[in-house]
Length: 589
Image (cartoon, rainbow, N blue to C red; front, side, top):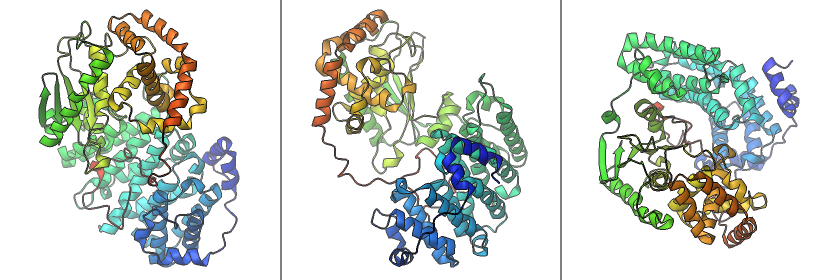
């Protein structure tokens, strides 16, 4: 019989119900050649693009796991599945393939070789968050989450060894990463499955136990807090904006654990709660101040000790930038100012009643640090990729600020994410648009984001042209682009808006400048009337778009094959146990 949660999901996804109701699937014949390759190939080759990554090899590895009892071979096949999740064609896997995997994992979990081997339990956890993070596979978790809960309880009581720590760490990460995937990608069935499975109870029990501190290290408790924070975010919100009973129950339960911890360990426990649960539930500065018995806010200079002046109108507060990186960042910002002023013919004159004297750039070490301390120090919402806050320009001592972070994913290269794009927002607000953010009632998204994209990237914007070429048959009209709202999605907001700005710059530059003058003089009616006039150039815009697409040399076919990487914002750097390195036996991308 199907469980209640499974039935509910089945009503939304009938094909899943059919599959899950009967876990028998078409048997896969053994392919001796592929099986031997999987059993003998150097595992380093698993983690490269190559012919070994096919749907057939996936199914052969699953078949080996289903029938194998040798721990070394099980380790090898499960590690292959991890590699396949990064380098393989995941879109070729069918629901039947996923059911085969589910059957194999379920069978494996019942064998003594599994319960005795933390390495296999580590693989089990990783396999869950790499293969079961969509609505299509959500119903299959009905069989696997109880195994994960049992595994967490078992691992908590095991001796402290690196092998057990890796397994425990990945088990805790599984909860959080599945919840993050559900929340970030609006996977409704996955969210429902995780909530209905009541995984919060397993996490709360673990966090409240002495086993969540190992050899005086509290990384297990911090990771459990983080997963509970993701659970809290996944819960349905109240219609009135107030916390629901379910949300308050999580808050109360975690706070109770934290209070007992602070009584025993003092400020260390406060830090664990703050960086574990509080900031990852996006609870914010005010709530932290109200819960000062368990939550703590550092001083500004503790987190951002570097204060560097680029010019009289620009300075940087940084967490870890060296002198060369500071100089490079200053140069990148100031070098585009002249182009901006020339393009819009501003005469370097600010808008009326704009008292901003200098832009403050706050540069964090990475997104994790931005997520935590952007909330605690500046009281901003950090569930995003950075932001520009103009404030109220007419207010005395107003401080316009761009919050950013290092592009940690391109290291050892250096860049600050969206630095030039966000600086254009400052220039636009200071020299073009009258008033603060939201002053004009509508039709500003395309202008703000399209202008920032165009000035920061110029004519070198291949990622936009890839999208334009792909979607040219369903291109929005100029009128539709002018009416863009942020809810219309990333492509409309940034890429099509960029194309509209570029079209006006190249074909109707005088009108483009006139739009900016209407905004500068707070004449929104004139701005709207001119947009209406420009909308009549739709046929010219369509022809221009087609010409741009025809001229664009799409190099995607020649590009290096992409890795199916983990969400770069899915996990927090400060939660990673210092002794658990991502070496050749524990690879992630």
